Length: 134
Image (cartoon, rainbow, N blue to C red):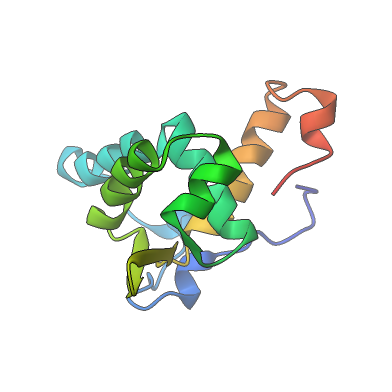
């Protein structure tokens, strides 16, 4: 991000958003880091990142549609969707026999965008990947 650009502060737009930007908050304690670490562990999974990206691109999808887009079996995708739903990252709505998933947390899309930005800035993305960011 260019130095003169203001970063997006997504939590300010979320219900329960923080009053202070992170650089103005006290240093995180050991206890405060635990849930943050757990959230990053949940997100640090190839399948979950790919299905989140699918849901960023198409905000509501059923299990079979997500499975088709990421090239996996619906049962495997369903297991990963459940983990994200349990954490409040995804919401689910039943429509007949199908469950449609959508991103429930407004911080997910900016977090994926920033993650790709970090990967690009660190040189871990290929030139082709850099041109196709979220």
